[in-house]
Image 1 (cartoon, rainbow, N blue to C red):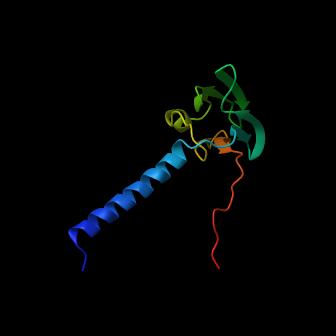
Image 2 (tube, rainbow, N blue to C red):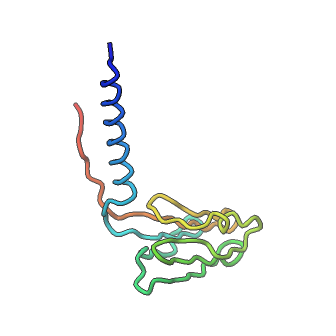
Length: 125
């Protein structure tokens, strides 16, 4: 049915496909990446992840008090927050579109998004 060489060829094909997908998700150039901050579901501010001065802090007034967000070296983190468990702080740095930091008690959401237009690669009938 299948020989040992067929199996090896399939492993190579799957490995190349997985490697291409990982490269595309992590390193492929895309559009501008933004840090979108919202409070109580309403947009507070959008900041480019590539901040020109390299280090930026924003203080956001949430439901329970102040949340401080830092953008540095194309990464984002919550430095301090007025929430009891500090889960948003312990989440650490984020740096890819789709990742987010959420402080539920303070109702602050920090999300990285790309404004790159999504094109359709193919379609089926």
